[in-house]
Length: 184
Length: 184
Image (cartoon, rainbow over all chains, first blue to last red; front, side, top):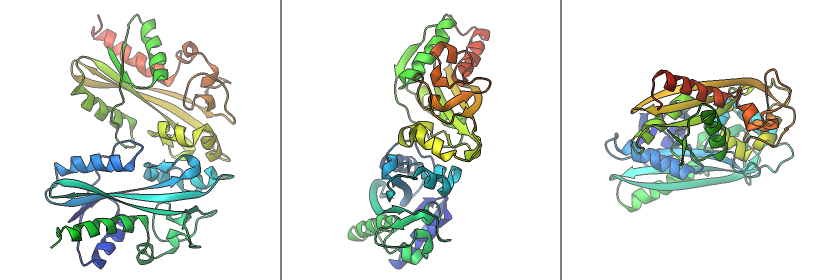
């Protein structure tokens, strides 16, 4: 099973979930086309359809966005661009005086036997008042999962993988693969 | 000549520039695919390549972004999404204590005789402290062109068309068309 991503952080997190399930994945380090659309599911599906034409065998890709409710879902599908232009600091400025409720959503598009299937994972939480933590990447230092009093960047990968949006989406895909005996 | 856009404001501005040159354009009201990339030129070129396969005859499309220097070019290629999620108000919050220099950039991709050519227009200015004006669309109420003391939204279309990024890009395209006798 190949994982298509250019992001080492994503590969590290996701390969650990697969390793825990006794499955090794192969890193296909590739930057692929993504459309500008409002729904990650649709962006990811179209990317997978295009990749299907050039990749032999089974593969999957992963897309994650941070959705802030009081900002109409901003930064959503454009989280990566926003993260590298206005940074965590910019998001914090936008939230002054606003509700801080947010969620991370991961969509996994799996191409198996030339069919594409999607699996999702959501993590609810709030945007912190100030960044904290050195682990993770992107908006992890400003995201506090519901029920915890620390950010995603305050955790090691193994702890984050116990409940994160990304690991949930991957676990849904793993469950499907096991039930369909698609894994050796 | 067909202009492909789903945005009535853009059609109104651009058709006026063509009308002034004695040329009528046809509105092909269509929402087309745009990739997520950092450079508008590349996004627009790939959209035009795809549209070339489904549109008969000559056509053009237009892409405009607002680039704020102190925010690493944010919102850039994602201006439309940013405009409808964090609004002008959000951009103003991001600029508290920061340099307000910015520019609008328009890229026109013209498909003529099955070839694609690009023309650009830039308008330098600053982001206003508060929105002003009822005309225009998008970020017009918070953009003050260099040398003026009013926003783009304080102007009628005809005044904006005298110097705007959008009209400059179109005028470059018109000059090319005239020099190449491509217009009847």
